[in-house]
Length: 87
Image 1 (tube, rainbow, N blue to C red):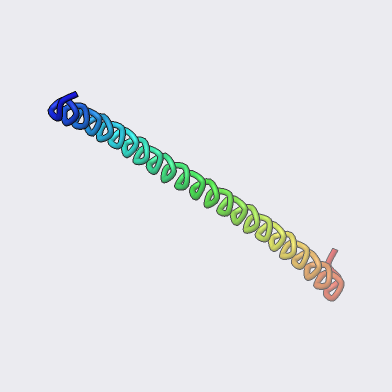
Image 2: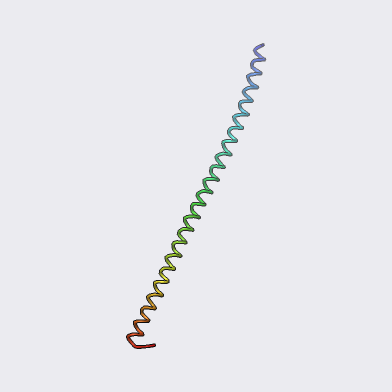
């Protein structure tokens, strides 16, 4: 095999390696994009869950406070009725 044939084969292999490296880089880039999308999706879901739990807790506290105010109003009303003997 002559030197020119060896150089030609070597250049062909080098081109093949460059193509493979480009393919691998493209795959890596795609995987990084997918990772970012998945991460953002997970973060969004966590935020939704936290916000949902927070809203549920707020509504629960509001309902409890509402019941407490109603109970207090009934109690005050009963005491006023007793004090002023209103039926």
